[in-house]
Length: 259
Image 1 (cartoon, rainbow, N blue to C red):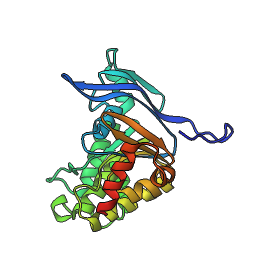
Image 2 (cartoon, one colour):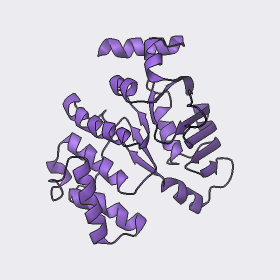
Image 3 (cartoon, helix red, strand yellow):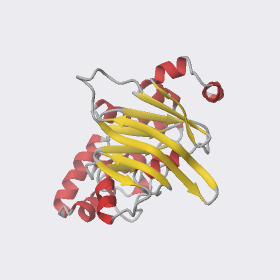
Image 4 (cartoon, helix red, strand yellow):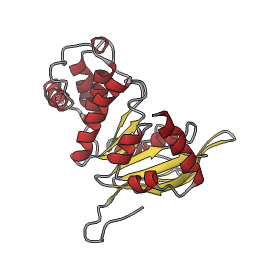
């Protein structure tokens, strides 16, 4: 990873060391080590089955690594030790995650979808949570949708509600797992626009994506995964212009030819 001068270097928000994940005899992640600095957008690309989504789920411990160490905003988890509930809660309180599918509650209004987790996780009152929900819905361009139900919203709007819901818990880090893959291109642009705004505001983000333009132009750091590990990483524009690994060249050629 290219790092700034010592005087301007930002602290490390996410630090993964030798992370491995096995499902039985199947090795999904093999000795993965990487860092993401505060305020950085780390774009993660690679072929299907490379382990990208699994790595993202390991960062917030939706999947428990088989071995290795994960540190997020000062909270360190050692996979070979018993993970205490307090440690798990501390790590997850620092991380927001947006999935491919929106996972909204269909029987709750948009406002209640954003407010409910605040009440249950952060202990905010209903009035406080709904006030915060209104602020975040305006932030993602949905200030007039609070009383609507998810079924009355487009896919792009539902994904923006999911982003507002994640932001409502005041995370230090946001993880995005192919957030536009379930959307047609026009609706996907709505979501990418919100993500670009978050990046401009300095949110630390890790984005698993097939949107190559976003990865190249918005990412500060690019991670290319294949065969259960990282095969290349560094400045996105340099890698897109001149990838050093043949596996990266083949992947980018195949993806870019389809666009």
